Length: 510
Ligand SMILES: [Zn+2]
Image (tube, rainbow, N blue to C red):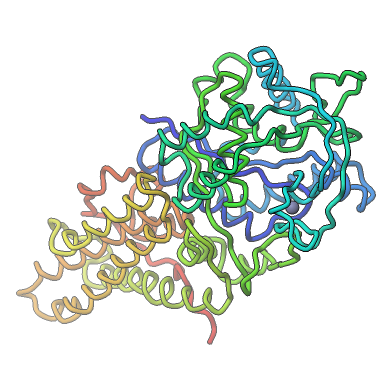
């Protein structure tokens, strides 16, 4: 059994979960569920980034303590992920005592091994509270951060602790040369390569007067205790969630995959590997940077003021339909748009008319012609025709050439279309009128049920609840999530007792 530890970015706790957060969690969840169906030992981590100036400000605006504020936000995020079927094994919060202890241990470990990696220096520059970063000139347009055009940059002068990132320039370059798939997709990798060409600068990793932070373990020469920069606190969550520094953490670290947004690749693919290397710890195996969900061409984010109510999106057709739509419509390697018009179209065409219709017809025919019991029949032409699409599904979802989840879904939906065409062309209702063709009828019905059982399994990472409903209606054993991809080829549906249930995807009132 292979170990597969994957993580999402931890969301910043200064507002409600939005569709941009949801897209990443759903995508990572599909990958986690895919690996469970392969039989891997999956550990799926998500969580919340709860320190920093923005959180303190948001709490003050609401007139509550920062801890009360993040407790409330954390429960909102967890409730939302549960509604959306995000099957995380662990939800980490950076205000947990174990995390704080782990961050301190990591910083102390860096300090012991490479004392020169931390140094004090006065620093001044334009600071973006949105990024929690000092911005370079080429990241500022019209006096504002390009990522946060609604925020005002602050000219900040401080004496802080620095991390000697510049020392890791050749290490990071070598990492990218030796492990071309460390960061995917390719466009994101190229961005980091060009950043490396510009040369890495040391980074300020503490903040003076920052109360809502993990205290930096080293005091300044003037005896001041400063707050740890939020990213130096947040990035180690992937490590502290394994129990670091306690015994046994190294059986869970490194992570096989970090799933993140394309805007934080520098943090995950330059700063984080440098921190780990400085501490003498192994690097994560891969980083996948997805794009953004756009609404009318704008990114979903709190700071951009672009909003779409997640409750409304879930309320439209349920959580699984939203999961399907987002992962089918927004390519996991690029940006894509959300619109309710497209959502309605996809729901009706793909789910109600194609998949839902195939399932309800097949079940109705097995009930009508075979008393609800699936007849015996060997695999045939339909199974053979699906094989190439099922191979394409795995190639798109297993990570070998990236996580092109939209292509994996497209492959299953091609099989669904083929199933509907098969029903049309083989006309079981005509075969049923001719007793001499009983064998043909049984072969056709068994083939359709066998194909639907595969659809349930292959769609389970994307629509876990609907996949289970379909599996139950088909009379499949145990649960769909207890099945394994490896057994698909020998899947025998003979004797399954189908049950007509509620429509999987009721047609919307027109
Ligand atoms: Zn910014």
